[in-house]
Length: 251
Image (tube, rainbow, N blue to C red; front, top):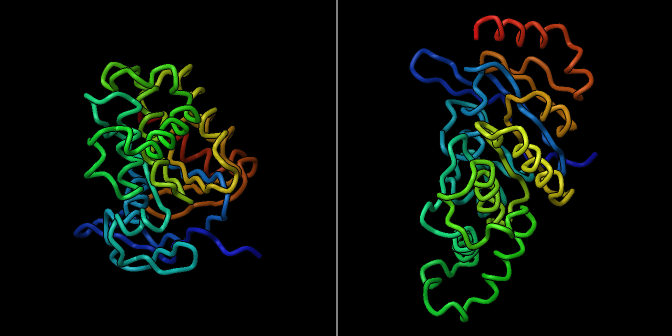
């Protein structure tokens, strides 16, 4: 059996007397399209923050390609192939799409400080950036400032910035949040076209998108894993229905 590319073992995070992540053990296979779902306050973003090193666990461990990375800083996890996006996008508002992606590529190549020198010196950076822009369906807006684009396009730019790090594992924190339906379809079409050997862990509230995209789903409730299975099993599970029905009644 192929070892998991990303794994957690009994991961716990407490804030004072509040337990945000309660003994979470996940095993995510290489190339998986794995969704993490649950009601608001279930601990999903906290878990992603633990995976990426933004937060330090109270106990438990995080493994990447079988190596314990629990104590590694965020940038060192990125260097090992783990990248993420955020619920609220973090973009270079005054740069064009191509400039933004090229800057991220330059950082990955170790030439970030020299990138703004005569542009011909960094043809390999621009070539790599142009490929990412094309792959994420952004070629038609490559020379427009990011602040002037529709929100769905901005989310695609953020994914392009994460991909510039050449990750093997990509963590997406609600990529479709605030994105109109037509634009979210374009976003997920771009995600579906990513290389099959890239592992994607997705947090998303839109269940239609989740069940179309994911091949494995973990359900998080009150910081703990309620269920992990295929989309078909999760969709028919009575406790999952109860959790989401209960949330719906309180909206």
